[in-house]
Image (cartoon, rainbow, N blue to C red; front, side):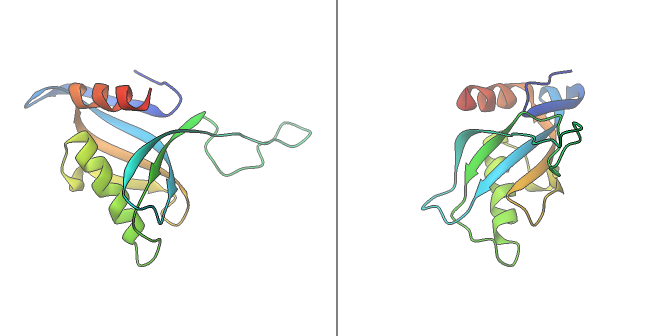
Length: 129
């Protein structure tokens, strides 16, 4: 299974259009942009106490998040819907295949995408590198 610090493959199988994967990934959202777009990677730091206990609610298994800019504001779930729409377009999957697993009211979100073709995942990774 792939784990590059910001995308984790949780399932791999042969789908209708070839090899497909289910992925989980961390996203950092900036709202109020002029247009919605991928905006690179955002480093996640994990502050700890003197005893080494994490002081943040962000999942320590991620070292980076996919940074996105959204033209929607975070009111009435508009930013979450824009986030889903952006990744549905980027991954060429239906919006119904994407869910926000955590962070619905936060800048940091954990998303799950089902049925992503290996080709589209490779294109996403290339855009982010």
